[in-house]
Length: 357
Image 1 (cartoon, rainbow, N blue to C red):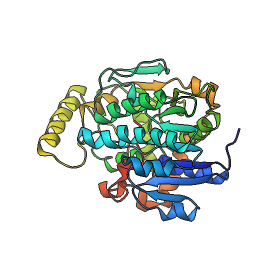
Image 2 (tube, rainbow, N blue to C red):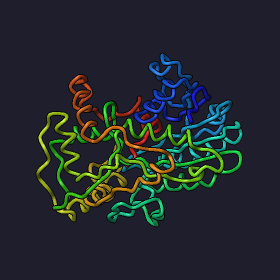
Image 3 (cartoon, one colour):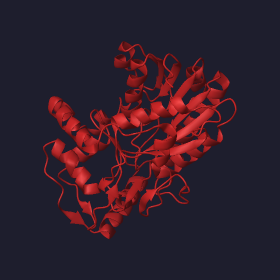
Image 4 (spheres, rainbow, N blue to C red):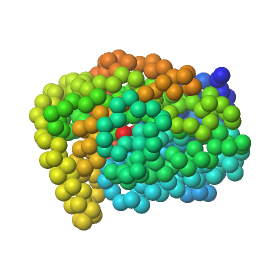
């Protein structure tokens, strides 16, 4: 059932995933408001109401939620480095403000963008479904704070506010300002970790956005989606380095063929983590122990529940997505790679959208 014409708030609507969700809402006739730290003339030109403010500011969030029927909470801090507080404010306090704002403003539906990182403990995850427990230990501030947030959002489900959480894995595609440019920027220095080529899920941007719209349309008190989390992906597990090399090929760059042992990658990650922490360096280390684990383990997920209960079916295959990415990169040569500043929205991209690793 379409929810066309409803008043909808999208936090992080200026980001990669948030922007794709906004486009779909506008196309079907919804009235859309975005909460973001930056200004987005492109959104305003589409008729979107842009509210500028910090997701960690309860008053700003409450004001943005007021008068809305539906909220997509997409904004988050993503990354593999930094201080815990840098993640806690946007990823824990932010969602708390959102569902509090929803309740105060009479919002009836909340779709929260989470991540499979909430269950990743560093070991192989092959075809697991939503019954897998939250990780008991986390390898980074991102996964820990996203886990806290998801559990709080799902616990907030009740008679006056229906909530659900989506866990899209590794979103990519045209206009990506995280995964694709990271791979392109590091093409010359990329190394395979260990001798394996583990199966990994990814999610093409159109499919991730469609899943959010489907979840919102099926979300109501008493519906199967109410109070639940769902894995979202393309449903096409592919060897990790085949996928990386597919993205490099789309940018007309050579494949990654050289490798380093897993123990070397983890040792380098530990040294870099310590160095960045002690010297309080800005940015992110090129390697961490979490990243070494991610690049050397299998992680793909059973999306049967999303198919069955949300009506989700990936509409764009990986190969079609790679073809679209190649066409986009060729038509936007200036977007083949981004500097750290360009990846951010005036330095605040982290609070506008999320990588969803």
